[in-house]
Length: 149
Image (cartoon, rainbow, N blue to C red; front, side):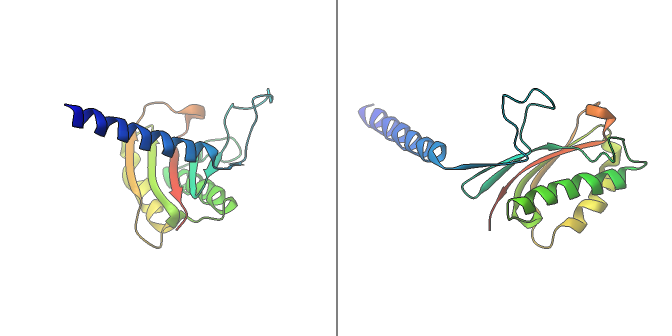
């Protein structure tokens, strides 16, 4: 029993130390927004902490409108992700985790046909989730985490 308590306390100390290291790291905001801005949505496009970039959910609209087909919308949203990664000095191959929310899972094959063309190395871990209606009637919303290679 005493050994378990010591082990648990040791783990808590390690986790607290890691949390302090992460919170002490400099943060860089890509397409950042502050709480004092009253216009637009209250989020930043991405946040870089150390070598890890956390990407907010992005849409593939064209001029604020839903593109004519799923392939075009997939290309738009993935290009938005790619551009954000490039602003942080990264590429699509730095993605380690991706989540795709789809208003219609029937667009799975169309999305994958485009998705494959954006990578030159291993694919990141991924989830493709049926979500129902998305903002602005979009077909896809994509978010991810990238770690600089």
